[in-house]
Image (cartoon, rainbow, N blue to C red; front, side):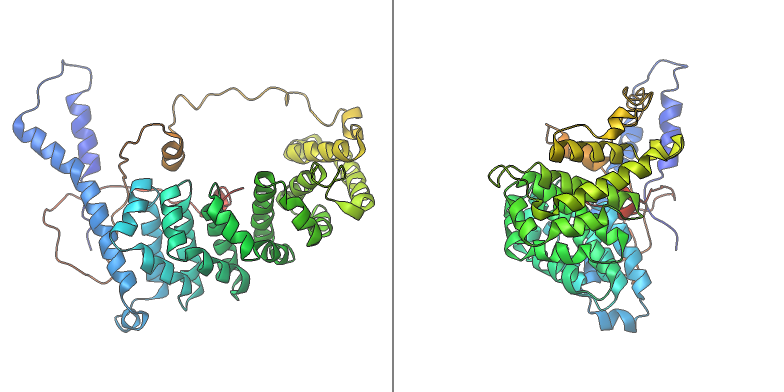
Length: 396
């Protein structure tokens, strides 16, 4: 099936031809102006239309889809497209307006694990840095469904994606954090740390660090639940990211001053000292290249040692804390040439401006609806990114 949509390559050539610097700018004819404006408006209109079509598919019973030959891989591809559309905060909020949020949350309960996982990934994109959609998902009991998948789904990928969505949902969302705590979220995070899946461990550790950093009084809670012992074990993990995340959590506990002058590490102090000494020994024997790869770990080990024992670690004495060239940040050669990602721009922008989205057009799976009202020349491109390779999808 041919793709429908604006001919972006043609628009680019037209723009270059009319502003190549070899001749003074000319006034557009009314015909050219009308064509250009219709082409530019068509993309936004098509995205909304496409999201409505995807919503219609999500509202169709699973048995009906299977009877029509639609596979779980087809649905996963459709959700992947939806995720691209809702990277725009405006489109993310519009999903609720067109009735698509409820069926998307329903897909968190789909019988296929890959659909449950992908639906959670889309939810994470929708709520990230988006207070309005966070509120809508909370009101639709989305947190409860995500918590259920996080704690009890038999598929570890589904559990990991659900945790990523929870992290995005409750970040900078006080009602969400409160609901998470009341739902025994910390106990679920403790169980996640006991998993053998390093990706799952990393996401859990990153969320723990965020929660402790935002709510210092929770240090006592996690200490009573036995987190220090588990994090001490993970601080010796073979996975560098897990080690660093565990050390960050331990540093939050070591710096906690809510326990009448003593840290929240409790009786684990001697064990921590042993682990830090082992890490210092391991770091001291690394090659220069390996030392550069563990820069944050070196700093965390030294900070933990200093917080617990009120003196610098031997890494500082050996000159391994800051290597030559590390004290100065690298030159900024890119910021003048590249715009930040759309969602990061939208979350930090002071002005409330409408964003436009340029995404690929994919054939509708079931053929719902008639042909487009206006034919467009083929064209367009898109870039997809795995949410977990990113930034852990979620908060790091």
